[in-house]
Length: 94
Image (cartoon, rainbow, N blue to C red; front, side, top):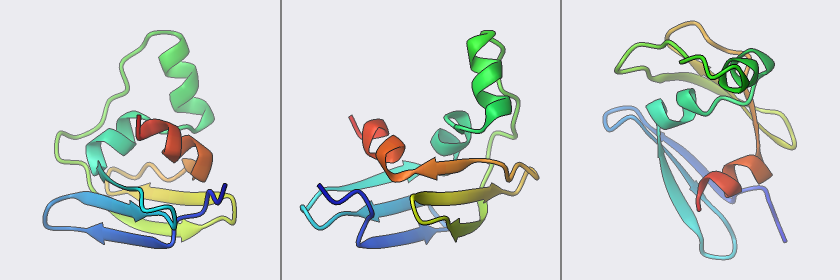
């Protein structure tokens, strides 16, 4: 199974990240959904302690960087530590 998407698009106006895979699957993730599910150590620890992760209501993606096994997503609230592995994003689809 190929985990890396064939297409990655950021829709700034609608605040969506579109990922498409070779198997025909595609998913629109809202910027807020991605920020709420950030897999970085700080955010994971906060969720494990059942602490609410604070971020602005209309948080937006400011940049994305390829990391081979996933993408690093930077948000306009200054949070830039989250690397979202392709497998993690596939799991968020269901």
